Length: 77
Image (cartoon, rainbow, N blue to C red; front, side, top):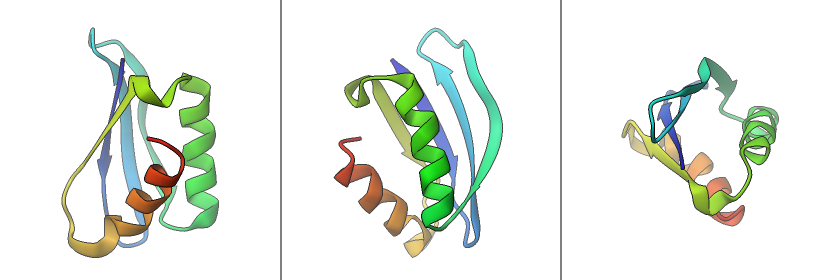
């Protein structure tokens, strides 16, 4: 199981990926809050494998996370 934490902001999102055992998979990285940034993010997620083995948590920051949530949902995360 992978856990992904996303710090949401208006123009970019900061992210961290770890396993349930605490192994760091990817140190903090950023991606833009737009289609190009989402593609970069989903390329990283696809390398992790089965979407059912990936849990994504967000810092609640109003509506800035809505686009990402929609994209995650459509892709089965």
